[in-house]
Amino acid sequence: AGRIFHYQKETESTNLEAKKLAAEGVPEGAVIVADTQSAGRGRLGRTWVSPAGKNLYFSLILRPSVASLRIPQITLLVAAAIHQAICDLYPCIEAGVKWPNDILAGGRKLCGVLCEMQSEPGLTHFVVVGIGINVNQDDFPEELQDKATSLKLETGECFSRSRLLATVLNRFEDLYHNWQREDDLGFILPYLERYSLLQGKEVCIDQFSRQITGKVCGIARGGELVVQTEEGVELKISSGEASLRKA
Ligand code: BTN
Image (cartoon, rainbow, N blue to C red; front, side):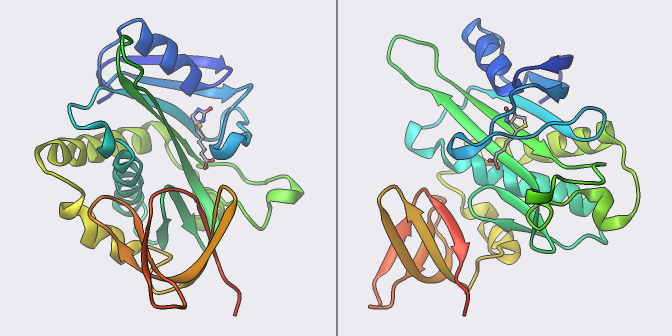
């Protein structure tokens, strides 16, 4: 990935840009990077504040040759790749993966992933993976201070964004090729479970109109979060936002 590279000083959102380019036929592996975004987007319709000169904002175009049922697994692959890249470059940071797609350090968010896909019949199919990593940001607006962090805040050092980007892309390329040869996420599950911040924890999951509470027993080969409810029923959760339950 990253052999086709589009860099922009400013764009609305690299995901938006990537979707336009993908619809025009730009091939798999293209990467769209911006120094700042005027309308960066997060999951669940949130905004992703994107100050210039500090962080990484980029999107990858993918055209995976797998059943569409498997597409949501890409989020976990990306989370694993980013986690591996952070551990390669900054082994002193204790980062963890919060299912399905956040990387946290010290309970605060370092990185988020937003996957979007186009799969309507008659249109070309593609997946856009948008990644935002807080690299050298040294302060966050007050309302984010206890929720967000950056590599610089965690280590006191400034980091090369291009080196981190290259490492993430290399790690992802490896995992993505393996994944396409396999039937599921089995090959990366031990890694994901080892660094999963939810493993063994009591959680609460908001799923559209219902709330599920229980204890996390693991991640399934299909990428779902496996939760045991108080009644002892095992549920596989395929989407939603999980939060830790206070004791
Ligand atoms: C989240 O945790 O809510 C996901 C955040 C994803 C942010 C990245 S930054 C690059 C790409 N372009 C966007 O507009 N969003 C993603």
